[in-house]
Length: 570
Image 1: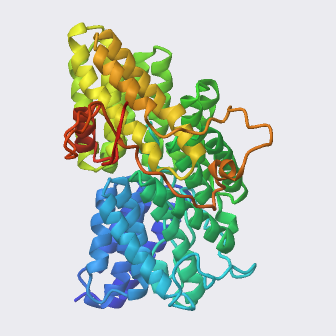
Image 2: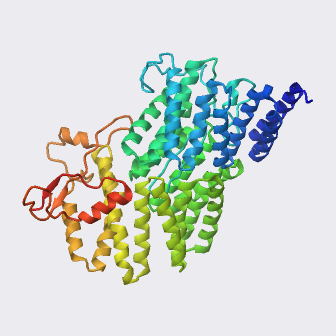
């Protein structure tokens, strides 16, 4: 019979070797060593605690390598294991949420993070405190703050035999979805909370949880909640771990980019990059470079984007950061396609797809499918483009991502227009009109007037221009007239270039300014429906402009497009 003590020594040696390989920059070798250690410990009930520690390290390396389905399965196994240390549960939940987020399981990720938040809040010095913005969250002292763990991948695995070490390093979620594609880029975080020091550990865990929750809100396109959570996360991280402020700043930048606010997005991203570099977080810096490259591409500065992408890939590739590497290749493919280098774009997209499929990164792979469809269309393969776009739209619909679903239909309509087939104009309109109405309506959920203005100018107006162009080419004069009526009847938007009155802006003007990141504002309601004919009997039976298209948009994308109220057009 095998001596459990001897097995325990062997398991510890394998685990130590795995940790060393991970820190040396060999995550696959580390994963193999942890796998051997787990197999050795599993048959021995006396080694159950050690086995769970190894399983968490195994899941951490699997997530690092981009195998999120395997990481999810392993972490669930540790949560359900009999006799698991309750002190480990919050950090394991946090790690689980990261892989769930990558695979598009947003509801489950939010549920897991909600439990983690509750456990971390309960462990604070005053468990009755309301949450992360309460005064009970302690600021880190100069001696008490844990320095960022070193390591090539910046997702380090703590060394030690204590239960705290088994939790792994809580992973920071990174920049989230933008209109161009749902890029959830994981990064680094502080060490696992130490049960011997619950106040500080709980505060740092709560900090990581807030950043993760803000990422989920951005990914789910819940802009008011995302505004609130990114502000809270930035405040809490600044107080607890100012050396890690780059991560919440990254989410503030991601939210601005996702809502079409390019100028503040660039400012916050540059601040995040400086913070990550100052904090010696190369993985975080690489993530910010990917975001900045995306921003530069969106604003027509491809020559600035490409060096950033190569700099990011120089880190993510050797570090084994699968999803981030795929995002870098996808962005390089987009630049190649814009130069007309379709073969190069297709090669880069193929590399990215292979990594994303391996990682189970469903939302990011769906966004890549839209890019691949554009190349297929330009290369004269319309059937392939159609199949890819249908797949992307169906995926976003299944994930409940209405905005990205609408943007996919808009991209599809634009490709149909480029095809030049008059017979496809009706289909293009069927896709574009509801999509543009839904995209335009998103601005009413944004927090302030200037934010809504930027959404309209940078995101909604290009979509509406496509609709007007298609309607005019199709000879749909009545549709053009109704579109004009509806646009004229919407809520007026503050224009940045408007001339202020001679005596300067009044109190209302100051309220419409874009708030700082820590401020909160109220969104406005969607505009009313526009009656084209009188409602004779008061039963709401008057003709409403674009009624069928509005109903289709709300049903297709699950987004509120118009209020239930009506106003006359006369």
